Length: 148
Length: 148
DNA sequence: ATTGACTCTGACATTAATGTCACGGTCTAT
DNA sequence: ATAGACCGTGACATTAATGTCAGAGTCAAT
Image 1 (tube, chains in turn orange, yellow, brown, cyan):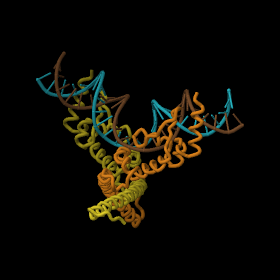
Image 2 (cartoon, rainbow over the protein chains, first blue to last red):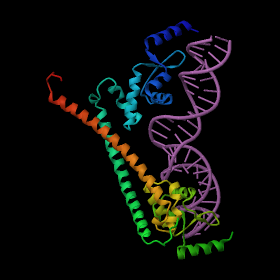
Image 3 (cartoon, helix red, strand yellow):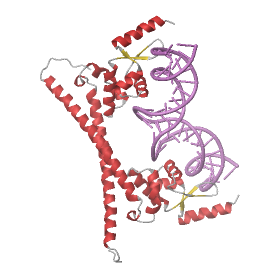
Image 4 (cartoon, rainbow over the protein chains, first blue to last red):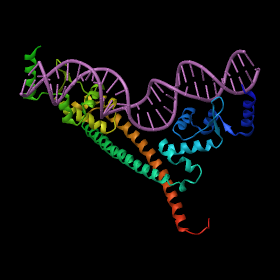
């Protein structure tokens, strides 16, 4: 079909670097192709499409995806990220009012999780010490039977 | 069919309290019926069956289930628990050699998880402080156009 | 006998991001 | 035009314990 149009598009893409295909974006960002498609389904990124259906990412998508991954690494969900991504891509984070409440909620969740883990850790530590002290006692009275 | 046998069995159960049905065990332990069946499938508990197929738990099963839940609350998996449950039900924990390595591995996992969460927490805290300080700066410049 | 409470099994759902596979279309260099 | 690399969609899997439902059988009291 319209070969000439496709060739023109290709020439532009190659010469000016305006767009990336999904594999190129994946390499540029470290996100897997699978993840890039997932981010799109979650409404975090909306690439254009070529006539043949290929995703066509603007070069700014590289920074956009890196930003998404930064927030994911903070433990935020794609849904939470979707709530302020549009703003933070255009402004400094501090000027996006949606960010702070999400951060503060996440901070509270983290504190609860840490507290839980630390409590379990203490319990476990005590039990280990208890076992070790019994072992020490028994070593000092050589002659008793260990069992599994 | 053999009504007399069933009646005899029932009489024994009621008079001596030798066995519990699953609902009774559930109430006695706080574990849901669903969970009790799950523990059985995971090999943690093996109730007898009546002629009609009902689970028939020995009264010691109450302590057994409470023990299982104690270990689950320490974050151990049913598979790990299965590895030493038999021993700890008959001996003191300290005499079961399978326990300590599991505890130590779990302790290490906990330390890693806590470390990760604390790291994320610090990052988040910094970002929150950064946003708050920007907000404060802007408030104090109310009406001025100066910028540093 | 009937009823209501209890039990049985088996199956599907839950959470969230990612991996992986199958099958088929597109692009590009030869 | 053909091969090989790339891309598309859709589906299933992953983890672990638990919830929930459906359909059917059992028990006990009337």
